Amino acid sequence: MPSSKKTAYELIPQLGKLRDEVLFGDVWEQPELTKRDRSLITVAVLTALYRTDELHGHMKRALDNGVTQDELRGLITHLAFYAGWPCAVNAGRVGLEVFEDD
Image (cartoon, rainbow, N blue to C red):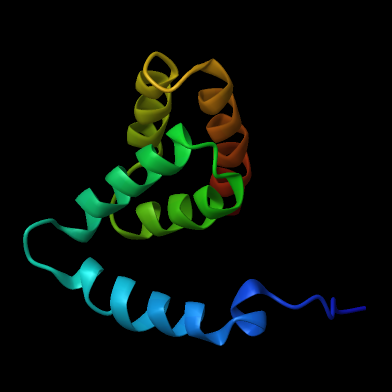
């Protein structure tokens, strides 16, 4: 049976509009950084902040933007020493799910 649970973007449509038009429509399209670089930065920040739900989607996006699984593994290992062990282990768990889907 399909879930009828609403998303935050359905509850607050303006968030979805800002995400689509400003974040992904403008910020991610700026020429100073490649989408690949933006993905690495975003995954690093989400890892450090222990943002599990968002990390899942951005790891998938990173792979789509040319980041390799090995690079994500290296990023997670590196961040273990700067963001903390629990953050890195959490990102590793997310990576397990994402890499299985890839």
